Image 1 (tube, helix red, strand yellow):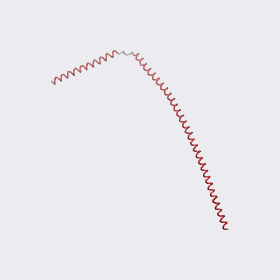
Image 2 (cartoon, one colour):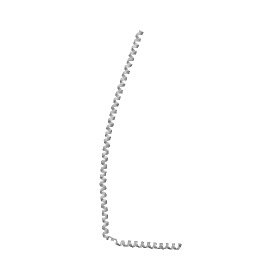
Image 3 (cartoon, rainbow, N blue to C red):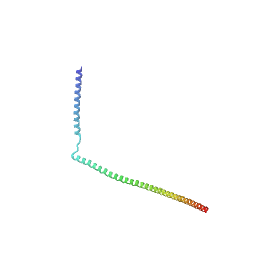
Image 4 (cartoon, rainbow, N blue to C red):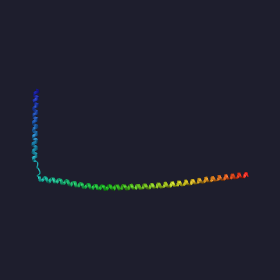
Length: 153
C-alpha cells in the first residue's frame, strides 16, 4: 500500500511539473504576442515626443522659478515692512518710557530739593535756637558775675 501511495504522489508531481512548464511556455508565448501588437513610434516621432517633454519640463521650471522670485520678493518686502512697524512701535514705547522716566526723575529731583530745603531750614532754625540759648546763657552768666562783683564790693 505504501508503494501505491508513493507512485500516486510521483504521478501527481509529474503532472504538476508539466502544467507549470506549460504555464511558463504559454506565459512567454502570450508575452511575445502582446509585444508584437505594440505600435512602436518611428524615430522621427520619438525625437518629436522627447523634445515636447523636455520643452514642457523647461517651461514648468521657468514658471516655478518666476513664481518663487515673486513670492520671495513679496515676502521680503512684507517682512521688512513688519520689522519697520515693530521697530516704530518699540521706539514709540521707548520714547513713552523715557518720558515717564524723565517725569519720575524730575519729580524725584523736585522732592529731593524740597526735602533738602526743609532740612536746611530746620537746621537753620536749630542753629538760631542754639545761638539764642547760648547768648541767653552767656548773658545770664555775665549778669551773675556782675552781681557777684557788685556784692563783693
